[in-house]
Length: 511
Image 1 (tube, one colour):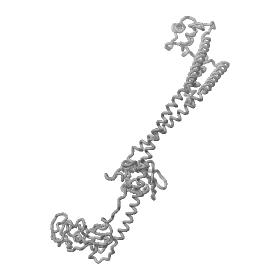
Image 2 (cartoon, rainbow, N blue to C red):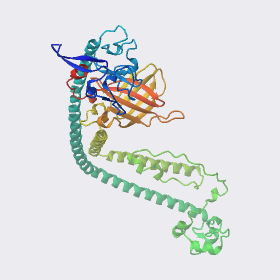
Image 3 (spheres, rainbow, N blue to C red):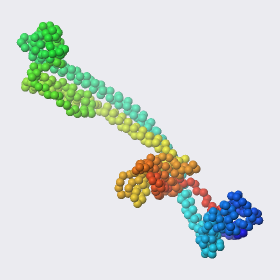
Image 4 (cartoon, rainbow, N blue to C red):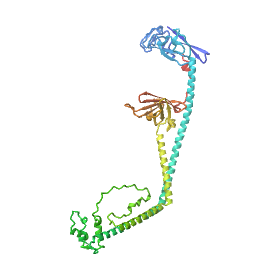
């Protein structure tokens, strides 16, 4: 049996306690190796005399009887590594001429020249742990600040916009009342002028209609006897009531009502025939097909209630007499001038007080819409899971970049991840915010972004972001472990936990 004694160093070696155990056995398994008692394989497969432990012959299927030799291919040798971290190595490496344990205990019979480097390695590792602890401590303090700022900022926004909205809503309603009161005189004035305008148009139309009726009467009165007879009416076949191609005396009699009518009685006849009557002067003139008019949209002004089209124009079937045309043009010009003057008057009717009230009301409504937009943004923001204490909230609406040899990667937490060629090209969506995807006991350690741009003949791109503690918020690395699946490493103080006292005694000084 190959046993040896290990010394447990306490403090700086002031006192020592001998702990006896077989070579290659950790302290946690020391109770299974009691000298003088039969040894039962740790897998329970068989029991052997204790002197066959570490005899360089493998008796147990699990190799547990040879913890300190290379006899069992599936065995493991325990490196005590006092002053550093204990470790296990495959039994095949025992006495192979290469020092695997920093305390050199794996090469006890190979003749290899090894130096015990455990203390130095432990010192360096402790320095690294101390630096990490300092970073973790600083990050945790930053995290506490982030939590306080997030809570304070969100509450301030809620209160600010809540009261701002109430104030602006009250102002809007107050200005609405002022506007409506100021607009009443303006509205009444416009209504009066509009009514006058409509009455004026009706008079103009009636006068034009009477003038036209007189012209038609004169044209039908072929014998100039001051009356229109049935025979004279029959000369205009277009007046046939049933349009059957035969305008009879009976039908003409029905239209006139009597054999003859004078100008006064003709007014009743005129209302029945004016839509069909064709002037004799124009019956032989070929009629061109109607051309499609280019209609322009009306101007966006108050005066569009009174467009030029409302002005009665002379009909196309008026006699083509030069003097009459000049007279008609003059009348139309007068009418248009009247319309222009009316529009000018209506513009003046827009009282300055009413316009000022409208402007102030419109400004208040715009302010209210802006506040509503801001409130919606806040509601969207607070809908996200920013961690147990909202510690990740500071990253909202922020973006972080990492430039590699080929690409510029951009991470916008709670929004999306993208990739853009460094030397020009379009941006590719590597995924939009999906969920927290860490393990159950640390769910906020991993972010998942999904449904990015589809790969050629492949799935949609996605990105996993692993968070580590740091005193900065920065992307540290990116990779593509699988096609269209990206991995990003991201440090942030928001993930830092309160550091624990790093007592390395139990780990480094186990014998």
